[in-house]
Length: 152
Image (cartoon, rainbow, N blue to C red; front, side, top):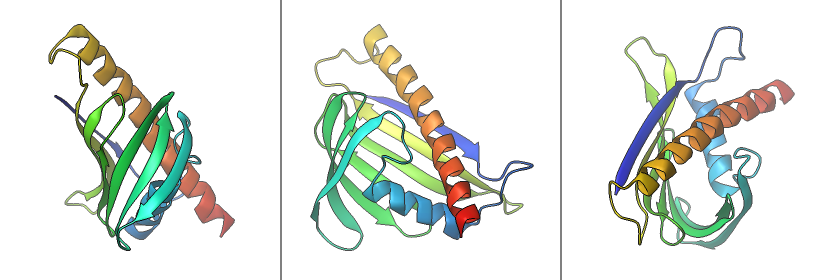
């Protein structure tokens, strides 16, 4: 199993300011349909709803088909449990706030690659690629949210 965690500031100078509610709205939209937010994802369909806050979806990310159980934590974050696919485990997208009230968006992975030796070069390369893809996805998500806010 490997863990990766990265955070990006929500409000950078010169950009449209986003509130916690704006970021939450975006995470909620992304949870239901990630295609507008994650460039490397080519398929995202909700397959079953367990409740208003828990549902299952099927995705294709960089050619890898996976099933995820998604749990929404309103105004705080989203947890994606990868049940099938090349990697399995948990991905979290969390809205964080520092002591000065500045927001950041954090992703955390705790994943394993079935059939791949823990600590191997293959696992390290996969973790590095996932970090790069998801930092890009965080920036793409925030950019899409700014566009949505401008359109309102």
